[in-house]
Length: 504
Ligand SMILES: NC(=O)c1ccc[n+]([C@@H]2O[C@H](COP(=O)([O-])OP(=O)(O)OC[C@H]3O[C@@H](n4cnc5c(N)ncnc54)[C@H](O)[C@@H]3O)[C@@H](O)[C@H]2O)c1
Image 1 (cartoon, rainbow, N blue to C red):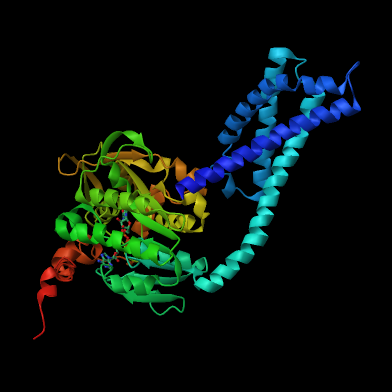
Image 2 (cartoon, helix red, strand yellow):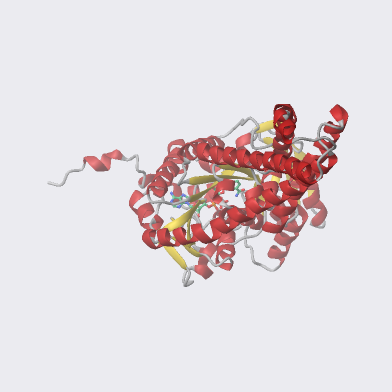
């Protein structure tokens, strides 16, 4: 697909240059035909053509640079029609301004102003009409073909499978998907219970698959007929993943590979994968998607391995999208108190005292509802735009040191005492740059950290949240105290002993 996209971009660039050159030549011919210079003869025109080549080369180089900088061959397909036309007009104007200036500096008689102006108008006309024609072609012709194909495949674009959809993020995502008109299949083992999505269990547009996602037959059953899969399921968080390394690798990594392969085999086009900014681990820089990864936990390493596998599986028919979520805060169907902002807010509100450990460490934060919105944005984006792309999900303004965050909590909860301490247990320290998702998907967060903390305080005040220390709010506690880990281990697909039992 990558090669195909590059080829497609190459073709578009060549077509643009062709239109530009034709505009020049045509303008030159028209001006000479209607306003011939004194003593002009057509044989001179053809004789002097090779001299034009240098000018043409210069125009082509300037055009390619300007067009590329305006996103002609990267993001412009995502632009809406009027805005797209505006971008084209602007890019062509810049291009001609530069060329006109260069022409004036080199030799003002080289190309006459009349030719330059006419060529400028023609270029805009050609480039805009070409895009318009391509739009009509895609809408009318390809729609017809698409309808025929859909009839054959019986794939429903408005039906989506969410794996691990009963968790913290999943329970915030489900109502958004329903609002957007999707029918939603949820495959989850309900390790932490089903109360997170209880109001939706009997919803007519929700179908529940109560299963462990390591079971291939269940995945096949759930995947059939859907075009898009969102994979949120995992053992989540450093402490939960450290409990049993083999189990973590099996659930987070091996199962993800199997799920992605099944999806690819069954014609799923969009595969959105929940990764984490923890992959950056410890770094003093502001990190974007191309920055070096420096994981400091098994959880982060398992996510990096998944990302790699998914990107390798990308093809013209299978488009994985990686969303690296910042550390999440806020209220959802399954609020977690094993996450730093929620935990400190609960401690401040209930115990009137919070301890900030390693206050100088940076973290990017993201409200759970904004995390869910980013999934919807990726789902609705044109496939070619997000194909095999990695996005940091968050906001550049939501990078805080733990001390700054703790001070904000202490400020918002009256009488809460702030204590500082040091530990070398958690070495994570990272700030992220989220410009790419803003630029490509026009995705902007809605929640500030302050609003999220206020939301949690309100939820406590209204008794929507009970004992924050209870196992139901913590992954690691649920796995340990509620026997969830033993249950998961018992269902291990790596337990080959079962295969050796032969019935007499
Ligand atoms: N919450 C965060 O701060 C955060 C940050 C970055 C990335 N993420 C990623 O986002 C995704 C969702 O996170 P979350 O906070 O909603 O997690 P969560 O623990 O609340 O939810 C995970 C869901 O997966 C299900 N699940 C786990 N193992 C399963 C199995 N073997 N079979 C079937 N279901 C299984 C659980 O029952 C649960 O409903 C995860 O992949 C996580 O790594 C979360």
